[in-house]
Every structure is written in structure tokens, then in C-alpha cells.
Length: 373
Image (tube, rainbow, N blue to C red; front, side, top):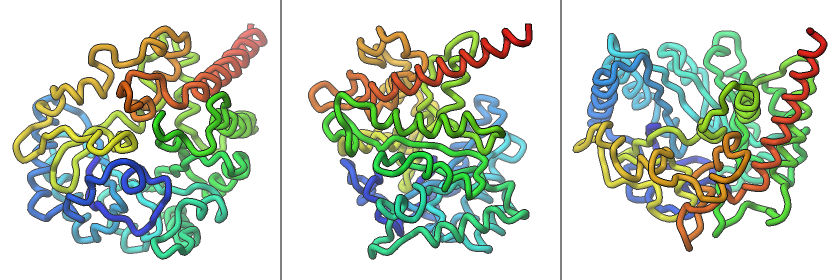
């Protein structure tokens, strides 16, 4: 993940970059410098070559990455493509709030095959509850214009999906139906980045409001007569429930199993860790002085990826459903008293969500197999 722009044109109140515990973005270049682009691309190509990687996936991120401007983004994409040519396939995507998308942006992305994901939290009321512009105005109409462009036949192949942060005060089924009205090929539902010190909005310590919300969406999605879209979180739980071997990778891993390169070429852990405390994602490494193998060996990177000693709390390791939920995101386990040595602040929700989906799907498969025999 490359932080090509540190600033954003929205002021989302649930943003883990600007609104939670970390302030490091203030000390980094607003946009990745022109002279850094080649160094970054060469480091990526060096790593791909050394490990004979068939593919490299790069996400252009922010802030709002489109604030880097078309010229800078084209420079980044073209240099990456050139450096990786004959080394590895290069899958480049951009995660945007969608408000700045226009025909020129889509023309650029078509030329380089850059896919586009857009953040949207539901209908106008749900979205504007959190995702307003810096002057307080609605962002909804601007996002819809961007989505309309992505749905055009010439751009459809670039449309990777929607990212929605769960708000338990919004109607879950209405939110889902609003999202699918924009014809996304995939939806990612994210839990608000929270910790034991700063718990999720509206959370009852004994309740499962977030699981209840997601399960309402699951039942609506799973019971539909045809598949309307893919939902990453649900599909991964289903795969683990039905697989011959339950993977130790968490359903959360798709949003955390990456390394972040900031606009100053410093290297950080997944940026959701910024929800824990100021500097929680920092490694002290940078791509001017260190290669990616050095990054991979860094103790904080090893631990964050679950390969260190006791990566999960004892309660998690003893839990019968840990193979389904993986303990949740590392950031969500933080407490200032003992760091990350805790179950997720969403533990009760993850347990209910994963076991319900497991039981529902396994029962259906058994019934189908019984009829088939």
C-alpha cells in the first residue's frame, strides 16, 4: 500500500488516519515526491526479482489518493509498470472516496489497467452521517457521480467494489440494498477501528450489535435467489467453514496483510494500527536505506503478521472458533494496560458472526448432499 497523498478532501469522523490516535501524517509530505517514485518502484522490482514473485499487488491510498493529481499518479503507475515489466505482473488499484473521479481519471486508469474501489457507507443519510466534506457539506452526490462513471461499459472492468464501514444505527438491509443498487462486483464491510481503550460506537460490552447487523445483511445476501454481489467477509468465513482444513488466516486478513509505504518512503505496519496509539504502525525503517527483506525480518513486522511468539491472547488460542475468526484485527485487541495481548474488542461479535455463518452453511451443504445421495 502506497500513501501517495496524506491529505483528504473529506472529514470522515470514523477515519483511522486523521480522527483517532495517530498524528504522524502531519509530519510527512502531503504528496509523494517526484524523486521518490523511481526509488520506490526499484525497491518493489528488486524484491519481486529476488523472490521470483509472479505478481505484485500495489494499492494507491491516502488520505484521498487522487489529491496527488493526474500527473503524479500517472508517473507512479508508469514507473511501476516499467520497472516490473519482464519481472512480475503488476496489479495496481486505487482506493478512493470517489468524489474526484471524472472522465479523465477513468481514461488514465483504463490505459494502465488500474482498478478502482470506492468507499460508501449507504444511502445519503447513512453516508453523510460520517462522510462529509471539510466544509460540512454532503459528499453523497459526488460519490454517486463517480460510481456512475465506473458503471459505464468502457469502465466496468476497472470497478473493483465498495468499502462500507458498519454503522449499527443504520438499517443493515437498507444499507446493503443501497450498495448493491450501484452494481459493485464486491462489497467489503469494515468494523469501525476501535480498541478496548476507545470502544466501538454504541457498543454494549455484553451485546453483539455488530454481529447482529452483519448477520441481517448475511441472511439477505445468502437467501437471495441469485448472487447479487460478492461479500468478502462472508465468503471467507464460508470457505473456512467448508474447507478440509480451517486456515489460520483471519477473515480480517484481507484488510491487514500488507505493508504500507508512506509518502516519505518510511515503511509502516497496516495503518489500521493507528487506531491503537500514536506511532503504533511505525517501524523506523525506510526504503531509501532498507530493502523489503529487511522489512520482513523486523520484529514488529514478524509479530504483526502472526508469526511471532504468542501472536494471540491465551483466551483466543483456547477458543474453539479461533480458526474461523483468527482473533480479529490486531488493532482491535489493543489495551494500554497490556498492549495487544487481548481478544478483540469485537470478540463476542466475531464469535456469533462466524458460528452462525458456519452452522447455516454447513447445514445447507449437508442437506444438499443428502438430497444428492
